[in-house]
Amino acid sequence: MLLPLRARMSLSPPIVELDSVTKRFGDDSRSPAILDGLTFRAAPGEFISLIGASGCGKSTVLRLIAGLTAPTSGRILVENAPACTTPANRAFLFQDATLLPWLTVRANAELLLKLRGVPSTARRERALRLLELARIAHLADRHPRQLSGGEKMRVSLARALTLEPSLLLLDEPFAALDELTREHLNEELLALRERSRWTAFFVTHSVAEAVFLSTRILILSAGRIAHDLPVDLPYPRTATTREQPAFHALVSQISRLLRTAAGSSRGHEAVPSSTR
Amino acid sequence: MNRRALTFALPILTGLLLIAVWYVVRLWILPEHQRFLLPAPDAVARAFVDKAPQLAAATASTGLGAFLGFSAAVLGSAVLGLTLSLSPLVRAGLYPWLMALQLTPIIVLAPILILWVGPGLKSVVVITFLISFFPLVVNTTQGLLSTDRNLVDLFRMGRASPAQQLLHLRIPSALPYFFTGLRIAAALAPIGAIAGDMFAGNSGGGQGGLGFLAVIYSAQFQLPALYATAIISCLLGFAFAGTVIWISWLSLRRWHDAYQPKDN
Image (cartoon, rainbow over all chains, first blue to last red; front, side, top):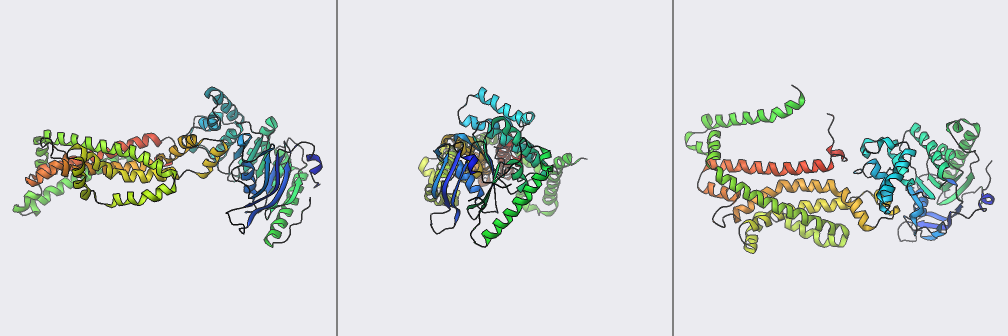
């Protein structure tokens, strides 16, 4: 069931390309590497989840692709341009909803368009359409403090999609929500993706969430890719997907791999890779 | 009686009780030759009526000085706060001296300032400015430096220009801090104006502010009038702080948690 994706991916040019990327914090070359020679490619339309023990560098990968931080060495290309130059095509969803508390939901949804200088009628229309798609148009005139955690995340998602990004970077966006809300938002995230087919990088601690959403899962360990796994469940995926035996089999299989990867990184052993 | 009415009635009750205690102390506790120290509340009330023109003119004069000095401090602190928030080097260079200025008692600085700018309203304004300035600068700077890092990342991802980041993120984020400084400064401004007035008020034909009146009345041993001056100074402080609290409530009530009605 777990096959390398290389062959399939090479058909279309990659949207994201990491080439022996190393990242250390601080200027000291002796400080430990968070990422240690990371290399992979993502094809357009992939939904890639990054999982791994805390501190394995998942979030750093996202921040590097976002251009929020620069690698110590190595090369990162997004749509064939260095990652730090053109964040126009990328949107970031933080673990926190990062809404501006002094703005209404509507004004929050319009924020990125406003920063980009989109005229007010156009941005009003586009923001409202996305609030409708995220099913929160009726909350448009509220302030963030009047919303639940799930509603705030929906605003954050709608705002990210107003720029029509080709690449969506999600850093544990649903981690703080209760299980039911999280499952619901996962389903709606996939429904939104059906419409516009952005490529996604998704950091999570939940194997079930990763399997439900992704076309491909990367298990990170000690700053490297320990496993690169395809998820061959058909789309569209709905609530019933979670009840299928194939889904459960994948979840338990990947959980097992995650445990061994985390265990071997603690022992500072070489990490065996199933795909390289 | 519900809780709301009670919180309204209690201060009035304690006030009446205090006046009663005042009378008791004056009539039955103080020996007769010391009664002048505590003029009867009705004597103070009479002083209010007798001295109404002087008190009104002095309140207007002090109020104007406090308002001008306070406003100048708000504008000046906004400019300096922005400058300080831009660079740690500027902060390192200026902060200790701002601190030194704040820790030098204003009543020592006042005579020097009067020598510099001359007596009258001008020095009252300068002294008020100095006493209100520090809490405003500190809080504004702190606010501008306390922007949520995730929000800064959001603006970076949105390719916001430094001006957009300042206008749409840093300044609104700093508002709650700014208003904290504003409330502290509003409580200090009338005190600064009155202190300045004590030194600088007797210019231009002898009509000064409340500080000047207090000096005159105590020199002339007019105790009821002195008490009346104290009470009106207190009311001026209330008016000042109350206005600022009201303005900060209007500005923040819709989004800031500290300005929401409490359940208990």
